[in-house]
Image (cartoon, rainbow, N blue to C red; front, side, top):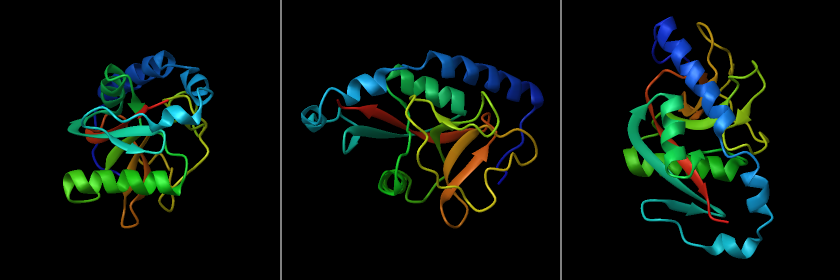
Length: 175
């Protein structure tokens, strides 16, 4: 799916910023926090965040590029949301619906910016669940290394140029 065309210079800047962010995310934090134990997952979320299992999610209505959205999440001690199963995906859809009144296209933390078709989550967790719209990912019209949710009539995932401005969902671990 194609939402917006950007100039090649803007694409290069977004890709360069994305590459920097990929290598500056908090590597190893996911594994360390998972070992902390399930008891800590009962900790409440900060104000403005919505809890689902051991993570807190926040819908960010301000439309930004994928690298800007990831940078914003990092400034909150979080990352763009990774999705590991159907129920997490469903809960993120409900969070977007609750905040916008519709299933608005929204950035999540998946990308293949480092190597085409090698998808990863910006939080460093395993890319173990996919919910692609039929025919996706497809790099339509050129390089599309970032993932947004709520694509098409089935509200699934689409790969998209990272320079497109969309709202986003940040995720914060509670343990």
